[in-house]
Image 1: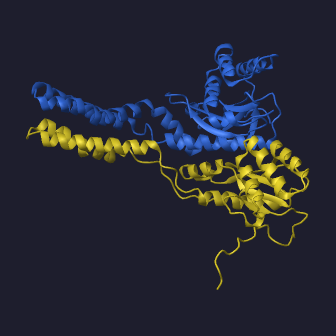
Image 2: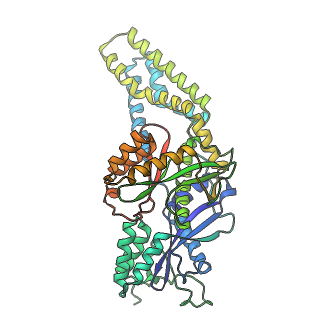
Image 3: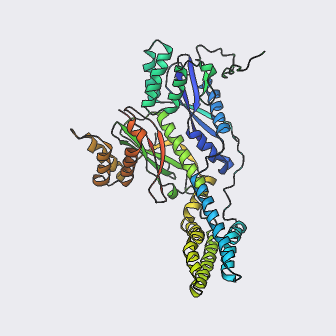
Length: 233
Length: 242
């Protein structure tokens, strides 16, 4: 199974679930791996507070990971591909120059033909440049969600409790998270300090789950839908 | 944390001191890990307590780095004998061409002779790379096929690694010793003789965001670095503590 991490960022009234940035890289590599490893073992990184409910957060954690899978997209084009294109144009230019300058003699013409097509054709024939076989993936097993306490997250939660104003508490949380290198956590707090309600957070920031004490157990632990932006009339 | 799995391929993670706290250094050569011999497992060397959540983040980041490296490397060295054959053919073609240019000396041929390496060198280098990297490619393909990172973290017990880490911390613990990254780099290089840690500190010193970050735990500002021009990757995950 793949070891994934999902942050449960503590708020005033619940948690925001957000997949760790390593999730996208793990899921991008997944199609090249054997299908027997296509299961998800998600570690919920939480601040170990009394109000945290792992069963309640589990569903949102799976959603956050699934969002990272769907939004991950193609891997960024690397430099080697660009360099390869420059080399290709150089080979083509030299190959053409050799054929034109050959004056009918077979040696430079052969060298030109080799550069233009010969080498590439042989490599294609032998399958030397074939990429790793990748097949579309979906979790082959149901995800296993466990929760693990994170000391840094716990410290942030405790320091926020001492501040009365919500926005000020989230701003403090953002500063502390940045100081500790918890960039994903800091982005959540920065969005909330800017006045966004947790239920309207965009999915790339995270999925909100209310506290178990505030949550209606008969309602599924789904984030509230985003408000409509267009005018009805 | 527990003892390591007897068949596990250990990936060493060290909690090392930095100028403002501590950091996790993953000193592992992914191309030497053999997935066929057993699953992968992180072996942690730390004198500071590490919470389970922090361990889970380290595990997730290492898994991402390990398999991304395997995907990048898996195409290398495949069918290396055929690649070698193509490379030899390339050398034959360039040899005949240079002989022709040498025997039929004309001013325009001098230009072609100088330009020829630009066109032919990549093919020769491809063949050389396929032969040189055949083992790394095979191990990467095995990692993708059967590799798995265990969900448990082992306690690092290698005596040499423990001694290196202890010596590094002992240097930091000396009273009146300024704690800056270049001093730590020097200590790692000269006193402890730990090249991976020395490279780690050099990279930290040149990373502007890491230098700016204040103390406390800047957990897992993940970065992946390669050891200069060498094929082995040096992966480290940085964390800071007070």
